[in-house]
Image (cartoon, rainbow, N blue to C red; front, top):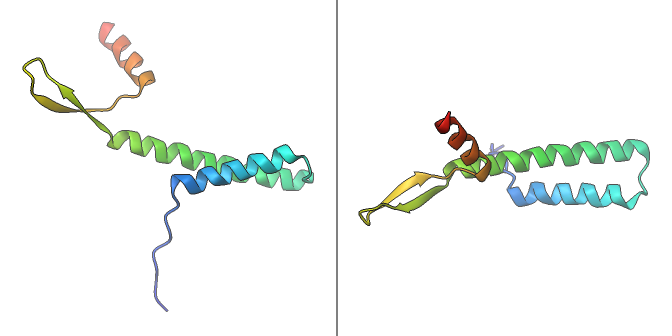
Length: 91
């Protein structure tokens, strides 16, 4: 028996799980227990989506043109974090 590494789920796979859960819940044809299971499945998949997005943001770098015309790499800061770091700098 060969040990294959577990297939790593992709963002799109988790997103599809979220969409499927929402569609099932909106359909209104599920019993209470089934609805709770679908909800829990959707929440778990949504958390995985957020985790994957956070990891991707950490990997992104921007090329910034300096005043002298040279290019340098700068880590990407999401808009919400820029406001926080700006406030910290002003304090």
